[in-house]
Length: 593
Image 1 (cartoon, rainbow, N blue to C red):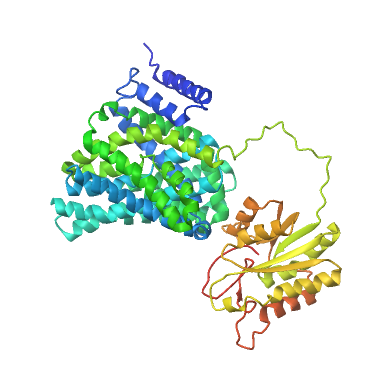
Image 2: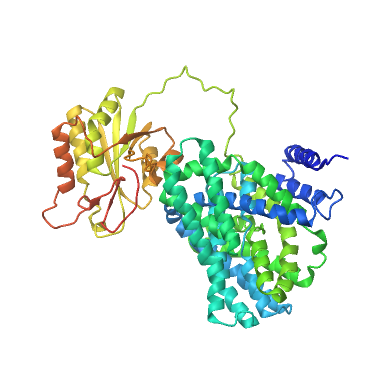
């Protein structure tokens, strides 16, 4: 009789997708995929996947995990985290500490050994990355709440990996497994150091060689090769695939943001099959009989973890912003309840290094994972809908054509002003464009609030005065705005709203060699994403200001050197960046012209 396994799997996969679409209003598709996995798993009525198959498929699921976690790097952009650190830091610090402390304390109260309680407290702080991201994708969610949840998931898992790497060697020492300092350092090196180094190497490969690849198909192939290599190296060294992938995604997102968007877009084309494969295999690996063995310790673990996540996130949000942030914190904590991925990996790690401890840790963690993975998506979906973020990402039908019989008058144009050497030589182009439109111009300059220049807030930067002079010569109405803030993009978008601008024009430095692509700066990305009006981005090459009148170049020199010989620093005497922000020489922020 021919083997019909693949046909049956394809049929069940099609049924899973169809059922998930039909029941979308009631049940997240993740639960449908998990249920399919249970159905065809070793404990299910249709045993298409046995324990041997699961062990073989684990390599595929590890790669799927690496690909999705790589995407989390997009939520770890330094400029975004810096702008929201006032909320993210206290929220996640408190929820991590509260979860660990409550789980440890409650488990000790029910008589669990202190070493086991420490390990369970560390593992309990983890949040299932794939479950959260899959739920966000299924709900097509976007917004401030979604960004807070995703950034919290990324920060939480990085912190858990680091804390586990620090604590586990000492637990082994207390258990007599690690008897020397070398053993302790070795375990930490495996979990944290080796995984981080592999992630950095992978990020360097993507950053240095990705720009030379033009087609999206080749780019995806290159990314999968690098991710496979990173995953294989991490598994070989018994490190953490979660840490490796997070580090690689974080590195690319911040070191090469213009390239990271291409990589992230390539991975997103595979999200649906990745989620299907991962959760079907995860469902097949679920043993419902483990719930019966959870007992008092498992019940205490589930309750303490839930209270720690929700109460800790709510308390951290209150610390950050007062009682008005309580609801946001509580909702974020509820969305952090999914529990899988790295929790399973850490449990396996404990079982491998210390079987005695692993036999006590595994039933509690694996039993609770069944509960959290079945209830977590339902709770998170409800939170996304209550926050208003669900459905924010709209899917536009291909046959929808925008009306073209209406014209739009561009009455006011906003131009961010930064580096004079980059921007001033392009002023003829900019003023010709604005003049031909018959529009007014709003010029905004953003200075960083820190450094020796903050006492000169009342001084208008010289570059703004250059704009005013040329606008007067051209007969163009010009409004200048000078602000001090860390979030340059936020100020640009805010000023565009305040002055009711119809267009934003920004410049970006051009390619100078093969492996240095057109720079798609972080600030420009944020403005394009958040601006309420169209954004025109034009290439500039400050090294070749051909056909630029000398008077513009002289004005650029005056704007740069104004007050330079007095030795008195001022808001317009700081070292000019290429970004629309004045900075001191010690700053290295990179943002657009």
